Structures are given as structure tokens and as C-alpha cells.
Image (cartoon, rainbow, N blue to C red; front, side, top):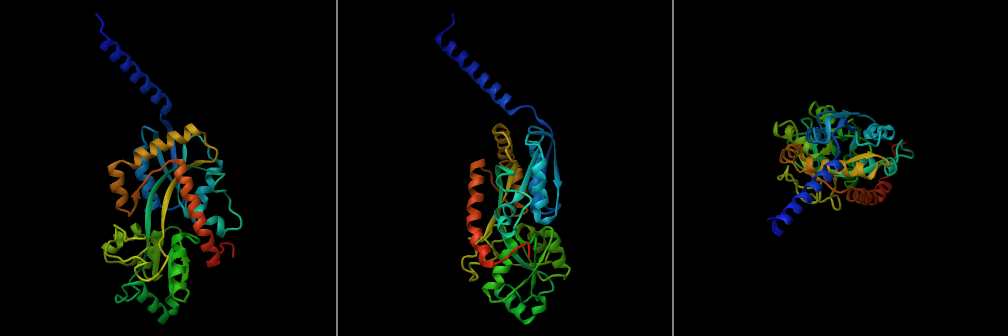
Length: 329
């Protein structure tokens, strides 16, 4: 005889099987080829997170997941490329906040609309910035105050590089100089690593960029990290005091990388990409791999990412007006 318990167990199994089949159908078959586009060259933090995540997205999300480095124009070329990309989940953009939260206030006309042309999917990582000096700055210079004093005594060498004009690292350098009543000449690069290599080679004196970009060079004794930009010390450089600790009030800055689909991507496509990215970013080897570059893996819902961008735009708009920088001048 079939008991009530057996009937319930059978019904429960059927319900579970139906649920699994529904989830599988919602997930869909893996996409054939997926591209993750980044606006920066190989070797840096942006490229690193793309490659770590790409490895985890296959084969479940895409059979082949490729990273496409479309460097140039401070990350704008990569973002602009999404305007003509299909919104079917086969093309993802990974970009720092700067290109979406700051560029609208420094360019009179952008080739893309950060809101209309992009669909937020998930946060990717958070990170702090660092300010470092190379071998052309005397070894006695160990903090920002001493660097500024040296710059005042050597005005022709008072400069710094950053990964892009109009980026957060650029403005950090400008604000450091202005707080001390002087101007540090800014030298823009296509990514932080090219700037660091020039600093190590003596072509420029300092670089402002993500903390993780410096760690290997600091460990090798090729440059010195004078400050980090977070509200607390970076866990990737715990012996390095923050700018706030060194007397630069209200200068606590960090940034994030976010993943986006082309504008007007369907909700089911966004949901599927979000689920795949959240799983990838939660993988222990991805977390550990990003930590090597000074990145803290983080994921979010699409709505949370949209809210983060809005908050950063509201913070940076008045700061940029006060700085008076325009990329068009």
C-alpha cells in the first residue's frame, strides 16, 4: 500500500525536479562566445579582474569568454563600443567609476551616455588609490609633506602621472598640490602600469593610481608608496598612512569597477549575467587572485550598482567645479 508519507515524498521530489528544470531553462544554454571589454591595457587592475572573472564564466555562461583590451581616450573607446554591441549578453563592459561618474562633468560632449547607453549588471571590485615616488626622488622623502617640500625646492620636477586625464587618481594629485598651495604638473597615461614604468625609469617623479598597481614594484624596491587614499589604511599596504592621517582633510577616496551590458538589455539577460558574475566573484580563487592586485572582490544587484554611480556623481560634480578642470580645454 502507498502511504501518505510516500505520496508527500513523491510530490516533493516532483516539485524539486520541476523547480530544477525551470531554473535550468531560465539559465539557458551557454552562449557561444562572450567578450568582456575593458578600456585599459593588459597587466593592470582592470585587465586582471576581467581575466579572473572570464575564467569563471566559462563554460556555464559562455563556452568561450574572451577579454578585449580597447585602450585609449581614458577608457572612453571601450564604453563607446557598447553602443553598437548586441544586448544579448554576449558583450560585457567592465569599467572604473570615473568614466561614468566623472567624465560627464569634464567633457562638454561625450560619445556615450552613462545611463542610456549602459545597463548596470553588478559591482566587480572596490579599491583604494596610492601615491608613489620613484628613484629620481631622494630616498629621504618618505611622506606626502616631504614630497611637496622637495617639489617646492625642485619645481621643474614637480609632476605626477595617472592612468587617465579626468580620473580619480588625476584629481587626487591635483588636490594634494592645491592643498599645499602649489601645482603639480599632471602627465596622463593610458593606464597606470605605463606611468609606473616611466616613474621607475626616471621620466616622471610620482604616480597616482590604484594601490594594487604598486605593490609588486614596492616589494622589489623600485618605488615607494607615500600614501593611500581610503578612509582607513589599505589592507594591502597597512604600514602606509592615509592622506587623511597626513593632514589632508576630506581627502578619502576610493573607486570601484562595475560590469555593464549595452543599454536596454532585456531583464532576463541582465538577471542571467548578474547571477553568473556574482558566482564568479564569490569564488575563493578569484577573491585571492584579485587581492594580489589590491582589489576586494564585490558583487551587487543591478539596482545597487546604479545607486552607487548616482552617489558618486553627486559627490564629484561640485568637486570638479571647484577644481575647474575641463578635458576640452
